[in-house]
Amino acid sequence: MATAGDRRGPGPERAYAPDLPSGVGEVVLSPEESHHLVRVRRVRPEDPVVLFDGAGGSVLGQLVEAVPGRAVVAVEGPYPDREPTRPLVLAVSLPEPGRSDDLVASLAELGVARLVPLLAARTPRGRDALPARRRERWGRIAREAAKVNGCSRLLRIEPVARFDAVVAEAPAACVLDPDPEVPRLASVLPAHGDLPWLLVGPEGGFTDDEVASAERAGALRVRLGPLALRTSTAAIAAAALTLGS
Image 1 (cartoon, rainbow, N blue to C red):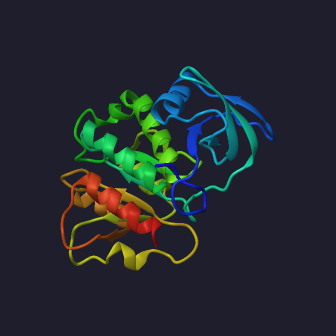
Image 2 (image 1 turned 90 degrees about the vertical axis):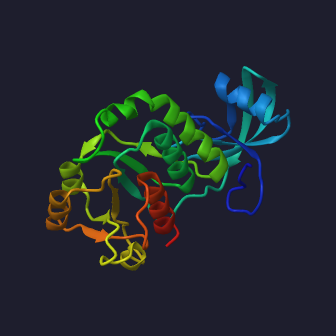
């Protein structure tokens, strides 16, 4: 379903166009985007189309040429964008490839700003190579998510980072921990200002040494609820809770 800017219900179909004109003009979509718009979404000449550039730009136009390999949109002017009030960064020890694909799709659709693939002590071997192998696939997933959620800014996949480097960089961090004695994430989220980075560990969790070093750096241990969750489930649930606060 397409999303209609700041209005309810379905709206014009959306297409990704990284080079938007500063004013009116025509945009020739890539063969892939042209095929999706014409063949998959069945948009026809004179139908409205919203173009987004993945970096915060969004415009309204009209389809003026429609063939599967070449779709041309005449830009008419700016279009309202949907975007979370505050950017959110998640550092996640990536699960297995299939679950990682689903994780990227969900975080992109939720409007997460940045995903940092995290190398923790218990991260399975080989996961550091996963982002490079899936780069094109994840880029396509992020673009498809933006066609649904109405946001013109794409999820950014950062370079792989080690746990200690992330803890040192994060201006504030919440480390997800299933310990029932730690506070709930919802209780520590600020009402205004920057959101804390959320750190989600591998299936075995963070080690005691990692948790201790994070706390020394000023991070807080937090829980989502009474249950221990899979990495991908915890990351998605934490993102939804944080962005909805």
